[in-house]
Length: 171
Image (cartoon, rainbow, N blue to C red; front, side, top):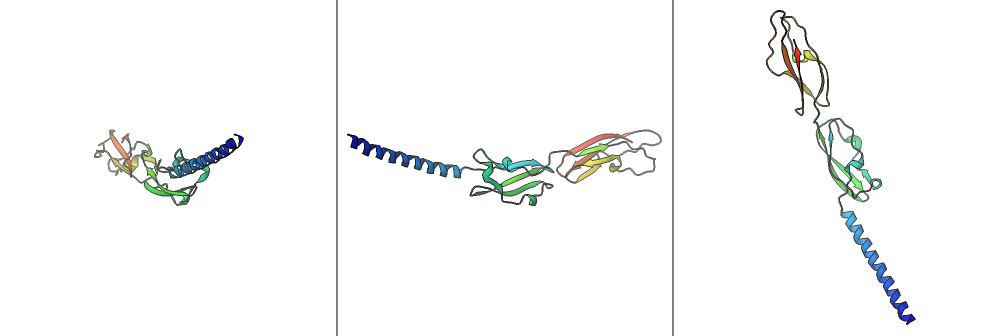
């Protein structure tokens, strides 16, 4: 009887080890097949996100790195930037979407002018802060006051992505 248990126990131990080994191999293949990265969207002019922003729940930060040189990514231009990332032995290309959803920050001021002076929309602007090119215009045709009267004009500042800041100024 003792011999039967010893031979059966040995077979069970070998069988258990084989099952655990096969399970470990199946888990390793499953884990390596899981997506480790995803696309990221950021605002124009911000810094490139850390690698953690690109990781899914299946990824380990310490196993992840940028393959694309981070300093080659232009964060001052809207659009999609392809980035190659590495997790262990797996390399994947993801997209960094750079968007501009922020209106220009503008300091407007009133203008005092003479009747014969030319007045441009820029005359009403003290400063503009934006990460893209801006255009300054009047919302409607400027009607300069005649004599010593005051009037108002709406000045519009629009960036390259269509974000708008505007204010009503006195002339």
